[in-house]
Length: 238
Ligand SMILES: C[S@@+](CC[C@H](N)C(=O)[O-])C[C@H]1O[C@@H](n2cnc3c(N)ncnc32)[C@H](O)[C@@H]1O
Image 1 (cartoon, rainbow, N blue to C red):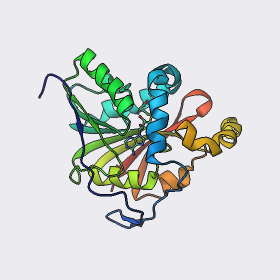
Image 2: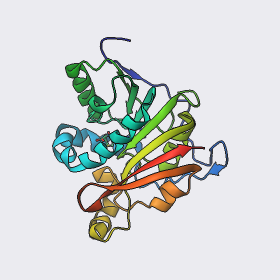
Image 3: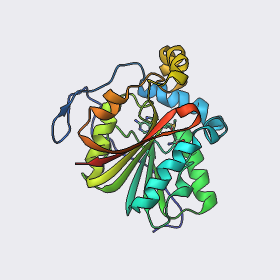
Image 4: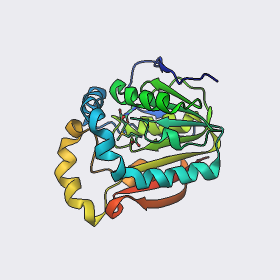
């Protein structure tokens, strides 16, 4: 184990090709709606990086706390954090868990690296890369977490397909995200929906399409954050 976490670039397995993509059990049709591109994600998180912790640290912390409670219960040996961002979660994982954190934004990842170095987290490795096409082997992780990334990534179905692929059989995938349908957030969803590419997330995001339609088993669902903004969903790989 190295004394300092490293940032390395993942080599993509190929060009991002349009779906369908094979899920291993069935074919999942890509959900790419062209509303958010990879460049949009990089550009918006370049802007968010300096203020991210201030804007989205405390406001989304309840969901992170609920996600971490599941990780502590599961005690995974090897965990993948998809979209590690500025690394707000990395000090919270059990030190006995080997953590790999990946992000497509170099600016967000640089903040995560500063945090990992400052805290001397020897169990955390950071990598730059696109989580819609990872070069990990099938079933490498017994836990995969996706905190506030599903409605950000250009093609959520491809990202889910990759999360399921790299998760071990009977392993857990934990999603924290905003989903539409709450009366408290209906106006926010409507107003911000056309701005997804600019603000870096989709406000109008369907639980049925992005959770229930995939070949995994829903183990639990909790609401989280102010006025039930988000859900924390624990999924088991079949
Ligand atoms: C809202 S932030 C969440 C950060 C962190 N997980 C947290 O809890 O605060 C979304 C992050 O996902 C990253 N991201 C979006 N799509 C990605 C992809 N396809 N591959 C890797 N990272 C991605 C963004 O760059 C950004 O850092």
